Image 1 (cartoon, rainbow, N blue to C red):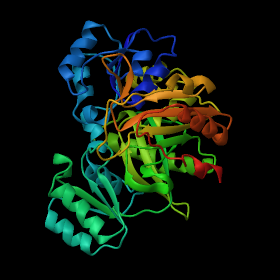
Image 2: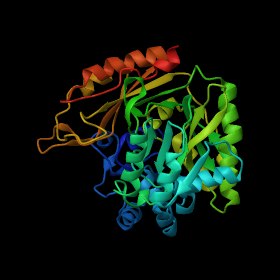
Image 3: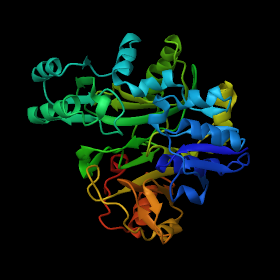
Image 4: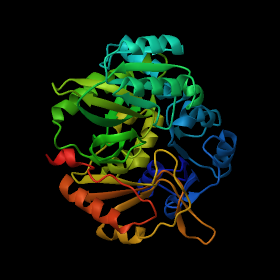
Length: 423
């Protein structure tokens, strides 16, 4: 069957690459795609917010499966648009994607159903938020309510940082309407863990757990990014704790969404914190594949991804076989100099073919080809280099060896991805 993937980053490259391995996949289209995705799919110059053009294209090409990658179109109702045209589409409807689209909704949902999360208050008035903030202990977490490209969260360690974050969100509107409300919540200490799950209503089929590295610099220093690297599995975290997270957080949340009339179908992504005492709390829920978690989780999938997507759409997710490789995967993100602030684009990228020689994968996030046909940078996160190995140490060595082969002016990457798993 012919398939359309919507999006153009590293996550969508990993999805297209995985789908291309399926014997059931015919032509794979990706809109808008990027230079790397063009190696495994036909890229289509339609943007993710052009719902009418996307649905018309799918009808014109008789596409039998659509997969939505990014958060913005999901929150804006792209799945509903495809369903109105009777085109099979994998992803949550608008009312279910709201679990990512509004942090206040998500926090209130967890509170209502007694699902563990950090203590919080929500505000739509700057003065009230400022007054509350002034009386809270530090560090403190301040979040814009809506989507902000993964950058709407500040962990403030000083009063100055806290006040500046609140002002930039609510007064300066750096994230636009996403900052009309804020969530101020307690700072959680411990180790983060990401669990993605295929979900169809109350049926939850978890993927292999992963861990992301959000801050831009080594040692979890500097501002938050969309993610500087990931690894899977998590050998240093007990299987019993992962199972507890699925049973006490992810499954109850899926059930809660059904109870609220917002039945979720797609990928439900739980960002979790493991406190030093072993207690679990929910940091966030996303309504789609994580980026760059997808780049380490999908290469470990042994089952056919087309089968899984179709089962979720058809309501038979509980019947499909889903198995995972014992192989480990480590992803190192190569970013533009200056990211997550301003950065240059259009810089030549060299060495990606050399990087693949040790069996590593290179997923493109922010790339393009220039008029001469050369590969150039186009985004803040440029490439995700994935090493596969017998264990985390092996996969990590391969990922960094491959990453060293790739050069572009200002290239920046963390050097400590997956170190926590080697202790």
